[in-house]
Amino acid sequence: MRKYLLAGLGLFISASSLAADLGVGPAPAPVTPSWTGLYIGVHAGAAWQSTPTWRFVDPSGFFVPTDVTSSNGGGSTLGAVGGIQGGYNWQFAPAWVVGIEGDISWTSLSDHRTVAPLTIIPGGGAAFPGTAMAMSANTEWLSSVRGRLGFTGWFNNTMLYATGGVAWAGIEDAAQTTIVSAVIGPEISFTRAFNTTKNGWVLGGGGEWMATPNILIRAEYLYYHINNATTATAEESPPILLPIIQPNYSWASYNVQVFRIAGSYKF
Image (cartoon, rainbow, N blue to C red; front, top):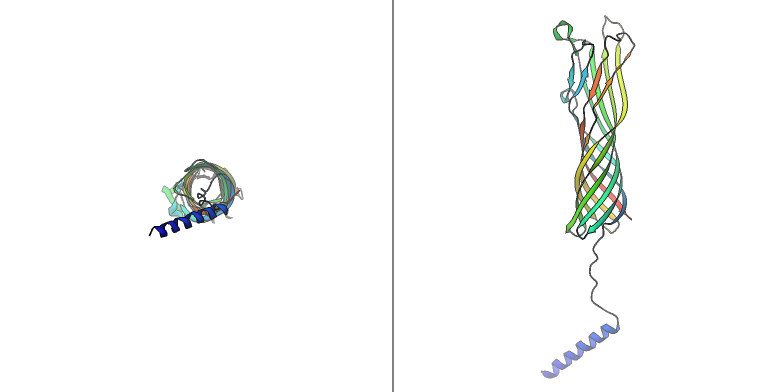
């Protein structure tokens, strides 16, 4: 028995010596992925625009002021978003990441509402046949600059994060009031359309997966509040009833919710 033990010990010593001669050492420790770096990418998803009451007012007092709500054919609308994003992450602790990101998204959000017929105050608030009023607000793009704070302690290659910052929106507002009356003669149209850039704020969060040291894939939710309080006076064509009737239109602030998927390349 002693002979076999001595033989086994000799084989072990020989194998260890051979491994040392060949430069074979212990397995290297696993490399922890780093989130630090500049990145740029693209995103796409869905958006939901929710707008509270708009308002139609005739300062002359001929038409009754009207709240233009979702019951008039709008109030909330679904659409698509797509765009680009870029930013920088800094992993300042083993499990924490802080960063800044800017993005721009093109959208297909359109809210259109119609009231017909309009009500006139003379005659005890009777409906005025042949009248109609339409208002719309189309969000053409959204943009933001946001800070991000992420935590990677639960999954080695996945970051859960919260984000928030300042936001902007490109909005096309339009309104039209039409009067068709045999007494007046030709159809009269009061119209106004204009593009504005409004600001607001955005908050959200999501999860990002480091598929490779350079490829980042995420899913995120963003909530935008846009300060779109705007009032405009319509222009009449042909100018028959000026200055008797000069309708004013007011668009209220609104919210946009976005869910999107994004892919980025980290340099």
